[in-house]
Image (tube, rainbow, N blue to C red; front, side, top):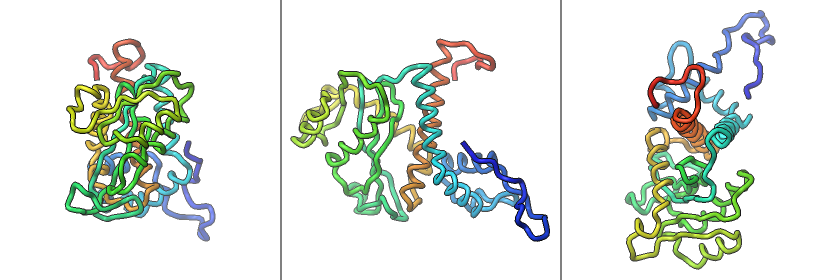
Length: 262
């Protein structure tokens, strides 16, 4: 997915220039940044500066590398294990966004501090299928339709799809949206215990917990929405590949297969 680049700049007037930092080094830095949640300057060293990490990150975003990586991981999982697309769970999560930014808003659950809401969707086995970013002050119901549009790229879809939602989606607008798309909703009712009525919603909550284990997303300092989406794509790819190896261990045999289940 990455284009071939010369090791040294051929336009340098003296024919000499410091060599280009390898893509592998930058990718390792981005994984550390995603997992640890530290600043770019904290990861910089004598071999790679913070500016180089940011520039290479933006270059890969323009090339769509992170979105392609997530798509390849999802296709591999669907081919080897299979996505459970007849059971879909959608829910939102709010994270702190101290720096504000394009997708931040006043959080109603955090003393109106800046926050980021991600409306995420998963299949019946907690595999992330995508997310829609918005400010923390946005209501859940208007985000349902854009979140459902993420399923259009997954084909073929089953004819009978059950959508698991919490009580925040218990509204006439939600029911109308589901009827237009031919989806069956299992929605928790307001004022009643949700676990009894929406037993499949915990899948997406587990996925949110997995995503929040990557501290760059648990407390987001990025201001650009394309950068936030790129880190979410990288996180989803890691979660999908990890689940693929774990579930395929009990079914398949391959060279280099771990002795114990990962």
